[in-house]
Length: 496
Image 1 (tube, rainbow, N blue to C red):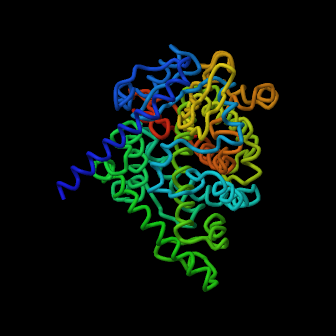
Image 2: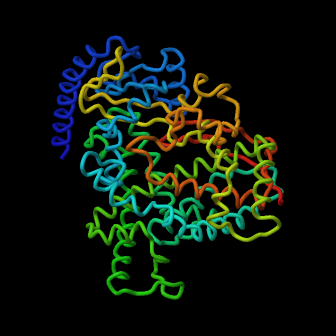
Image 3: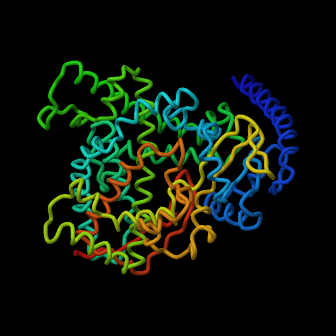
C-alpha cells in the first residue's frame, strides 16, 4: 500500500509538472502586457496568499499597485484579476463565457453537477427546470416560514438584552439555516444556538465551506488524490457524508409522501419533521429526476443560499449599529407599515420596505458576500484591444474592489443607502452592482434572498434597538468562500 501510494504521488507530480510547463509557456506569451505577481516554480504566486486572514487585503493591495487587471499563478493555473467596470461587464454579459472556474469543481463532491457547477446545455436545462420555483408567486408561500423562524430568533435574542455586547453571527446563522431547510426541503430542523455544539448538520455545512476555501489556497491539494489523503480532505469528506445522508433521507421520505398522496400537517410529520410541500423539492421530484440529481440541486441551494444570506444580514446589522441615523430612518418606515401592531410581516409589507432594501444593498456594496466570481476561458478571449485572456486561464472578477471604485461610487468608503434610491440607481451602470453576479449566470435565488433578509432584519428592528457594544472588537474582514468578519459582529441590544 505504501509503495503504491509513493508511485501514485510520483506519477501525479510528473504529470503536474509536464502540464504546468506546457500550459504556462503559451499563456505567458499571450499575457506579457498584463502585470504579474512574482512566480515561483510549481507553486506559482501562492506564497503571497498563504495567510487566509490577509487574502482580501493582499488582493486589494495588488489591485491598487497594478490597476484593474493583473495576473498571478496558483500552481499551474493562471488567474487574471479584473476589477474595472468595463472588464467585468464584458465578461458577465458574454453568452459564451458561462463556464465557472476550475475551483468550483472542488465543490462537486458536495453539490455534484448542480446549477452552480454545471455548464453548457446541462446548465441551460437545469436553469429552465428550476426557474418556475423562483417565480414571485411561489416565493410568497415562504413568508410563513420566514415569520416562524424570525419569531424564534427574536425569542432567543431576548436573552442577550441588557448585556454589554455579544456576537450575533451565531444567531443569524441558525435562523438562516433553518429557513433554507424548511423552504428547500420542507424540513424543520429547529437549530437553536444553545444546541449548536450537538447539531451535526450545522457543523457539517460550516466545516465543508471552510475546508473548501483552504483547499483553494493550497495548490498541492488541488489534485484529488492529494486532497483525499490530507487531513483537510478527510475532514471535508466526513462533513459532506453527514450532509448527504441527511438529504438522502429527506428525499426518500418526500417521495414516500408523494407516492402515497398523504396530506401533510403538524399531526402527520415524519421523524425528520417534514412540513408543508416544498416547491423546490417537489418540482425536482415531479420532473422525474434521479435521487442523485435531486440531491445535487438541494445541496446547491443549501450551499448557495445559507451562508450568503447570513453573511449579508450580519453586515447589514453591523451597518445599522454603526449608523444610528440610518437605523432611525428604517424604523420610521417600519412604523408607517406596521404602526403599533406586532402582527407578522406579509408579502406586501416586505415589498413596501423600500428604504430597508436600499440599506441592504448598500451593505452588500461595501461587504459583498461573494467577493470574487470566477470564469474559465474555454477559448482565447479578446477582452479589449490591449488584452487577451488565454484559453485555460481563469478570470477572477473582483467584486469587492469594483464596489469600492471611486469612479463608479463617489466617496466609496462612506455608507450611504441613498445610492440605491430608484432615481439615483437608474443613472448608474447596472453592472456596477453585482453581489448576486449578473448577466446570464446571475443568481436564480436573489429575489428569495432579498425577501428573507428583509423579513429577518425587520423583525429584529421591530423588537430591539441595535447599539454599539461596550469594549468589544470591531469587524475584521476576511475572504473565505464568503466574506466574513474574523472577529464576529458584536452588538448590544435594548428592547424597543
